[in-house]
Each structure stands twice: as structure tokens, then as C-alpha cells.
Amino acid sequence: LLSVDLWIDNTGFTCSAGVTVDLLEIGRLDRLEFAVGHNFDSLYLAVKHPSASTWIGAQDEFRLLGEAADVRDFDRDGSMLAGWTKALEAFGLDVAAVVRVLCGILLLGELQMSPKRADPLVPEIS
Image 1 (cartoon, rainbow, N blue to C red):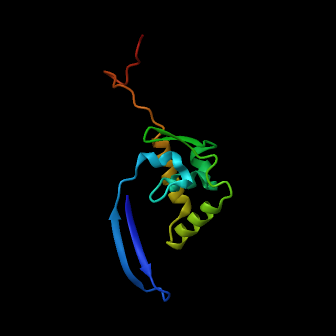
Image 2 (image 1 turned 90 degrees about the vertical axis):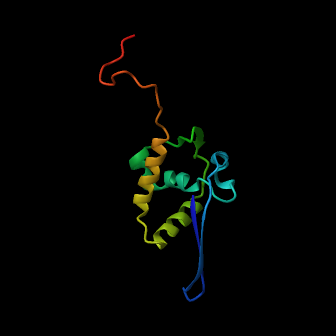
Image 3 (image 1 turned 180 degrees about the vertical axis):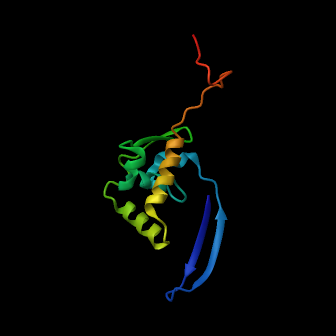
């Protein structure tokens, strides 16, 4: 996880910046909005965004890194989603595009791997 901290004064001048790289721990998956520090909130917020239904339908349970994540109770009042959306827009990011990418990541986590067959084009006979 790459983090960039910018220190901006009241005139808009960037005083300094710091960049760090950290690991995102799997244990933070089930803590939802109560996790301190880096967490998976952006994935959960993407699901709450109105455009997410285009990509994931009404699904609100996902598997991330092999762990179940249920987002039904996350950000019930919508305040975190409003702040997240505002932050993305402040940086000139297309919110719908960010939501689409994050929903894609969530859906990739739903894939189940199975043993490789000898010839994937020939159906298995049991």
C-alpha cells in the first residue's frame, strides 16, 4: 500500500510531502470502519456507491484474500461515502471509474480456483 502525505499551508502551497509503503493486513478485513490506520474502506465504500449496482448488482457479501466480508452494516448513514466521493472529486478523479475498478477487484476475489484439467476444451466424464 502506497501512502502519500501532503502538508499544505493555508495559501495552498505544498510545504512538504512524505511517501511510505506499508502492508495491508488481512486482519483488518472484518473490522470494517473501526480499523485504525490503513484498511479496506475504499472497497466497502465502492459497494455503497450508486453506480456499483451496474457492476455487482445487489451483492453485499464478498471474499477478500480468502476472508468473508459483509458490507451491509458499513456506513449506514452514508457520511463516509459522501466524504470519500468528495475527496476523489477534489483530486479530479472520475468517481464512477474508481468504483468500477474497485468492484472489479471485489469480483476477482470471488473466483474459485480448481485443479487444472488435462484439456480444458474436453468435458470431464465421471
